[in-house]
Image (cartoon, rainbow, N blue to C red):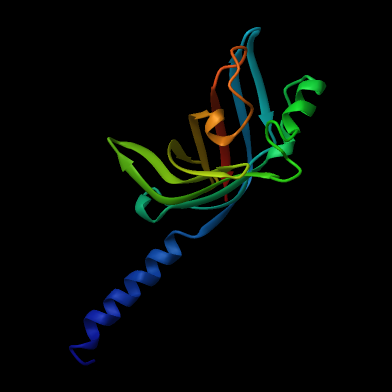
Length: 178
């Protein structure tokens, strides 16, 4: 083998091995819950499980990526009239904007904690956010991922300023990827 080709071949084989070790996984199960304080207490609800893809390898966090969607119309708060109102154009406008979407642009570890930076899109508003998350490898080779973060609903045109309803919504998303 020519000496010039040896470094090229080494780099090429390294790239192939990294690509194989960080394969794209599908979200196979999970949950998405939220809570927001209002005049009568705290409204809690849930969405259907997230769907999408993820690339994650705990040994190479910098190559991780997430492309996750949640069906905006799937939420439940155990109050049919409130759920109907939240689906309207005043809040989530689910007819026009069926999904809540997060797509990462960077995943890293800061101060020993995992975080994913990317674009969060709700309705017709997209903002760059950094979401903390935890990852745990299960015995069957899947990963359990979870993230809890706050969203200012007004930043995404979800309702109007209202003294009866707080602006900050706490969201917890859990996903198992395989």
